[in-house]
Length: 120
Length: 120
DNA sequence: TTTTTCGTACGAAATATTTCCTACCTTTGA
DNA sequence: TCAAAGGTAGGAAATATTTCGTACGAAAAA
Image 1 (cartoon, rainbow over the protein chains, first blue to last red):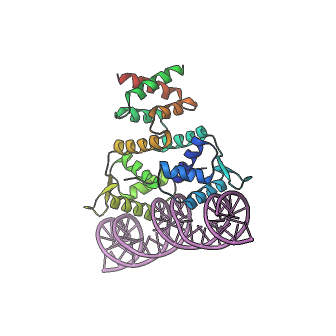
Image 2: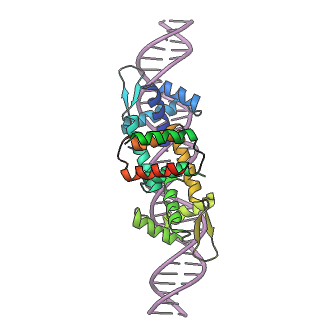
């Protein structure tokens, strides 16, 4: 399933902090992102539960939500989709864009070189 | 300005084929992507012109549209935004995700190594 | 016990995006 | 000339997404 922009914000919170209540997610969004009403966050998370993007534990009155999929799995999917639509599926094109026009740091560059060499 | 999904499809055509008429863009979309009515493509391109995402040459009856921004500039912006929201701005995280879980081809890997080494 | 606080559910409104119908004009071809 | 083909413009409808007011129940505090 394809998370929307707002849904992605919520997923980020769940990935970073683990299973959470609506209250916690809403507070975090308000601190780290933008002003949003409790009932908006609630509604969105209910929709995400319907869609199967998150699971909901209803045993306690305060429902606890957690991501239905692994962070890496979802990110991989979104990354693949991004590469497909933007770079016709060519990962190397993306990386070249990333480093071709500077603005990406030297340390990142070194880190990646090391990483790639270890893949052998 | 932030192109939407459909707008991006249209931009792709313009980037790939250069300044084009609505007819050409619509035909290309129908061949390469999906069924869409002429008037839908027209409307979208009109909106894009209003937003300033594309420019329109009205000298001929068949208006000719072209991207307002360089392909690389727009792609850079979108890529940066993607890295920011998905990987907290860490380009190396993205690359690791890209190659960490295999599925990205060997030839891409070699290509990138060569590319990065030339940056010295 | 009564009031206040904190939760969920639900519907509706506000926005954003996409799609296409229809009117009307110009060009082309018979 | 005049019908057919092909253009643009604009509005309205269909969808998708986001936001939030309000009702109502449970728990906690007074």
